[in-house]
Image (cartoon, rainbow, N blue to C red; front, top):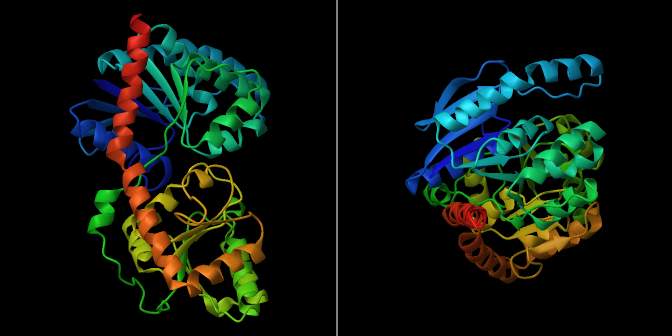
Length: 389
């Protein structure tokens, strides 16, 4: 089978959707399928922009008909370039003999592939990953119409959590999918097996909690910092290591000082994927206090590293963290509740070990990339059989 993976970002970048595309590419290739990657680029002309592990990566600019600064110009340029853009995408589909197009993280510009679908007999999938669904209700009505047109032509719409699919249906009121499925992302079990748990910084405390991610408001790092003071009031001094960077970093540093827990928080900045996994293997437990999420892959990774997880009960999180079985769930935006959960987890070694064992078993069974790739291929075959009837 020939598969075209479509994404807004180059797979050579680290983290997020780029990791998803890279892992799916590897698994599809192992199973004998041919993969080509298409990314949204800056050039009007379709061209090969890089090679990722022997997989060709093509790029081209996909114009949107929406621009707050230049609305009329955007519409004019969109329709002027529309025929040539579609022709180039059709050329790519036919040159690669694509049997299926899998779009990861649909943006309004991806609507071109809805047009391609009309002229091509293959299978079109669209997968929602997180912010692409969370922010959909905030988009311009014209942007929403573009995405709606894509989804209505897709053979299947997938979401890494049920919550994301619900949010899409809520934002695009009255939309009807041909088919929809839940299909989570996976954890890199092969990489996790090779990574050793050791301190990457000798100044780190012996026992620490770890959180990792982009330092933005949605990730709720400020809630974790605030929970340290609450735990301190309970007589328990917890140490937090933060892996990641972002616009909230200075605010978080200032917050930790104002709350009197600056000596209990270590900001490491951006780390490589392997370094984050190493930190996971070395930590006491992993915490994620996000205010909104899709299906956070970082939780699956922590569980696969054999760590107990405490996380906020939002969106797709309870689909992976089963409260009291594979981890602990707490209400979002609630430092006191988080502190109570953290104190319980850190002071009860038996509970922590029990959750760790169950979490690892669950992650290795449900969130390995090979089985997820097999499920994608199975859904493609399902749609092909339906089309043949």
